[in-house]
Amino acid sequence: MGMSPQEIGHIIHYQLGALKAFVRVAGLQLSHVKPHRALYNMAAEDGVIAEAIAEAVAAYDDNLILVGLAGSKLVQAAENCGLRAAQEAFPDRTYLPDGRLMPRSQPGAVVAKPEDISENALRLVREGININGEQIRIDTLCLHGDHPGAVKNARQVRRQLEDADVAICPLIQVIQ
Image (cartoon, rainbow, N blue to C red):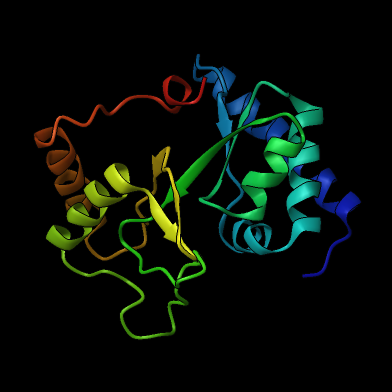
């Protein structure tokens, strides 16, 4: 679905308003936001879309942390708008040399074994991700909930990180 930057801004504001209401009813405070699926992937590569999202988030609440694919245009746009940005990585996915996620249609794009996923998580936390020869630090990890072993994977990742003395904490504590 093609949308103008202004339309993207409107849907971001609408969704942030709804999200903030749900968070408030739960007695919590909204600290970070992340576009989902197709919009996330488009914003990683398309600077116009990334800027529309970042500008909308900044206009709504410039204290929010904007989460984006490590090394992506979304992270850059967030920083350009004065937002704090969180560099995200996916231990259950395979990366292309330019830092993009390998399309799921390609063999090997999804990491299957919980042990491999947890090893990837630890490596990503310790080393970051290599994008065309540049090491990018990672602030947060995302495991896909649609992965067949999502719960088992999350438990295995947590165990691996805790065993390696990696602190697991809220994102707001990582991004100051």
